[in-house]
Length: 242
Image (cartoon, rainbow, N blue to C red; front, side, top):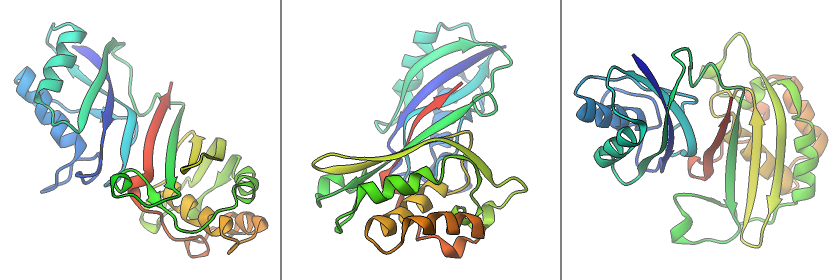
């Protein structure tokens, strides 16, 4: 059996997230169906991260095994021919049989985009924020998230596991004339954690919270202390590192 690593780009607008769910259209189900049409056998695709409904990916990583002897370029083109226009395989590489796209990942980078002005053309890829935000205050808050911390306060209740820690190696906001871009890199992510961080930090940027409140929220280990969950359309899985 050959192990094929794939690099996937998708617009998550019309999907109920990555993972297969009964009666729902998901990225994984559409991708596995496309591979099955090409190879003629049911194939399971493992992903580096399970993105939620409405969330996008610039470079999702997946892998699947196959007994076929098609070269990588043929596999890429054949799968893409079966996919809708909002999912695209950017690259296919044969890797070692031991490679696992999820368990071998050392870190993941997510990006969130906030639009400073409303446009109907941005509605699927930005969160429009009508309030001015203080980026300096928000970046000071980001410093408090760095390192290995318990992120219980930023995860939804049903995601609670024995280990609620994330090791954040990068976390910052940057601003252009038209948007505010947030990037965070960590070894793992809890369910809806990035969107809850965004919802909380928008409150910080608006002056509704103080910088020291971020540390208090972390230490409380209480989701009720954090802000609301930001909408999914501004969130992108940007990169997975190995």
